[in-house]
Length: 125
Image 1 (cartoon, rainbow, N blue to C red):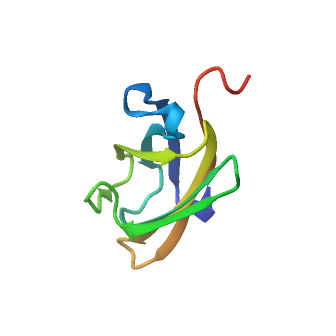
Image 2: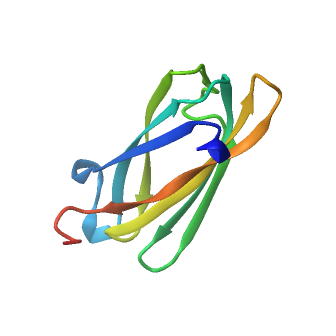
Image 3: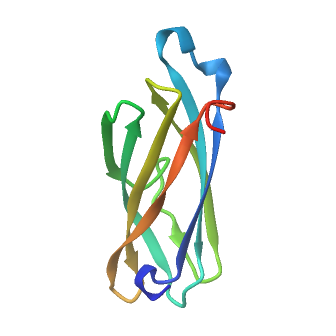
């Protein structure tokens, strides 16, 4: 836990059939991320880096400031939740990445976002 400074990441994925067009190889997913600060030091989420891989091993990398237009400050025992989305050309893929954090103690560090699966229901068993 020390390596991540007490920052814990939880993910939840939803397939969005109403926004997808499977015949045109367009598969839309939303993902909800909960970032919890279980550490002793407040930290601001400064930037993000995502690696999104489809079933053909095509990789999209996304880098940017903050998340959903915000750079949230997480105080000890606080969490921040947001929902965003991505589009794949295949019914299955993965996402992983990292958040760059700036601690109120002056520290800068990366928090790994563990890989999670994007999958159309009933595709993976």
